Image 1 (cartoon, one colour):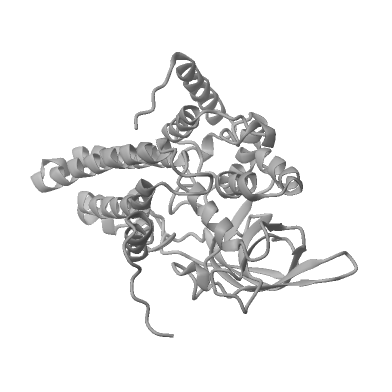
Image 2 (cartoon, rainbow, N blue to C red):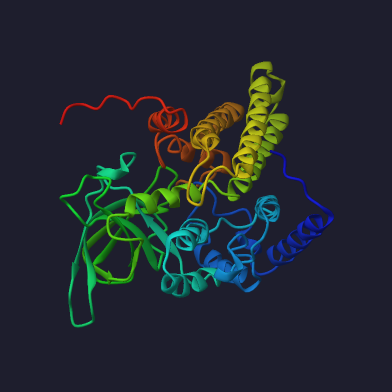
Amino acid sequence: MHLRFDPEDEAFRDEVKDWLETELSGPFSMARGRGGPGDETAFVDERIAWEKRLGEAGWIGLGWPTECGGKGASLARQVIFYEEYARARAPGRIGHIGENLLGPTLVAFGSDAQKQRFLPPILRGEELWCQGYSEPNAGSDLANVQTRARLESGSDGDEWVIDGQKVWTSWSEWSHWCFALCRTDPDAPKHRGLSYLLVPMKQDGVEIRPIPQITGTAEFSETFFDGARTAADNIVGAPGEGWKVSNGTLAFERGASTLGQNILFQNELAELIAVAKENGAADDPLLRQRLADAWIGLEIMRYNALRVLSDESAGPGELPPASFVTKIYWATWHRNLGKLAMDVLGPEAEIGEGFPYQLGALQRLFLFTRAETIYAGSNQIQRNLIAERALGLPREPRPPA
């Protein structure tokens, strides 16, 4: 469960720290500490350029196999990079979805041609990706996806023609491509009629409507497909295997970057403790105990992440049993931290930092974390997954059709 870093790993850590400090003290200094939850639309152009700089320096795809253009870095070195990235308060990653979700999915399930076409631009930070999963009636119940895709022959060869709607599509406004779960066989059972398609976003058949959030930003959007097209070969796996491939993608979401997330949470907690000391809230025994509980919860989160990452019982794209508690745990912990932040700030929490709706970091934290126990599978759905998939309990009774 414990990662051990040898002298070579520590030398790698120093290399990462030195590079980040140099780069973030130069042209990208304005984006330092920006682009996190509730702040995703800050310095977008600069952060897109930052992705390319990361690619030039070889920091994208550290854990990818070397035959796919990655560095084949050990788990320890991946963890080191994500931890130091968070400690340096480096910009929020716009390329996260391509590098950490789509890339590993193609490594595990993609064809050789797909790997050759799509992996290099991700490694260079040149092509950005978004995820087309959720729909208005298919969020936590992902298998209820209704976006349709049909195969048609044309003068340019066979193409998938896509009609439907996705929602909560993070970064769609800036993305070049979307990996979309579509129903390609309407007569098959709902888990079996799905396919995993790679769809270009810059075409007439795609409309993007940003969704304003309570934080005042619009990081995600509604995405409408109206006769959108993609080549017949842009399907990952075989037709009807979309459920298997999409679950593989969700498994990769719980990779080494989770420990970087842990450091981001540490940064937020440290800021909150500093505020509590400054404004006297730390003298309140109840608030002091809640701050201590938050620190304990963060340590538990880290150790469970280490346990998941070191569990070799699951194959590629599969989840070990301990991973099923990850999402509900961090989402609930982070939501509670946002509430604690407001209580530590006291009456000041209700006053914006500037006109017309300028929020402080802790205010953004509170508002954004209201959504975290809902998105990526609500807490209620997570409990079902723990019961049924991790513990092997009988499925929850379904209402009659």
